[in-house]
Image (cartoon, rainbow, N blue to C red; front, side, top):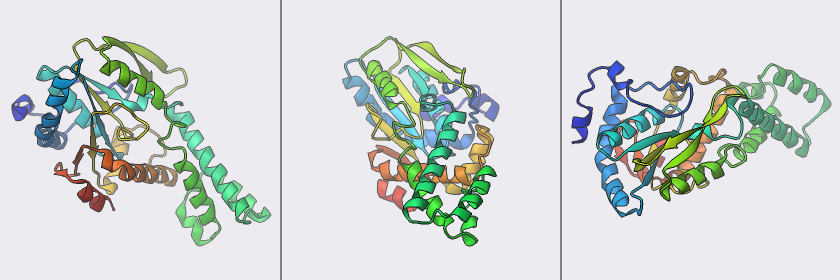
Length: 308
């Protein structure tokens, strides 16, 4: 039954004509590798999903598809939602990337501010913020090179700055300081309590590109949330958290193909991605279904071994 739903797709173009997530301007490129993963995981997913739908008072279930950058979250979430719609469940595909407090440009600036402020405070605490170093650091910040780990070779004190900056980022990334978890939690709660219509947020790349759309959920049984933070302990009401494993070397290739942001191959972005990966590894035990980079369902222990 699972495979039959997808048999009609013979080309990449046909695959990419299916409805996708609700993140404005997002480039989602589905290929047959994503399709193979979905075909592999759907039988196990359905074993958990169907009883949950049947036993819920409003026959509603929430699935999250999470993973690091480049794991194919949006593509797989789109295919899952397509399958549920084709089989009569009714599904909506929501992107969690619509729910940070700041648009990407301002959020990137806030991340950088936190990194630099934390780094400088670390130097001060350890007695390493000397006058001559302040000038060097200012020049490095002005040229956006202060995150480059190679600097430590000539400036050993930069290790303190970068490590403390990274610790500062850890207190911000993926937390309620960065993301409006309460708004998303309220949406999930209303959906599971039978709401027929909900206003969902949309976020573009400019400060004026924030708006809401009224979405009809009357015939929707499955809400699929595509989001890096889909297994976060700040997110409530997820019935089936799905975690996608990744190959770290694929991350930047996928980010470039999505064309989301400038500076995607910078040392600072590498640092952010590293911290996001740390968060996923720390939260992986919450996932009910873990999928390897090759599309196989694996155990928590197998995932930890592969990622480390």
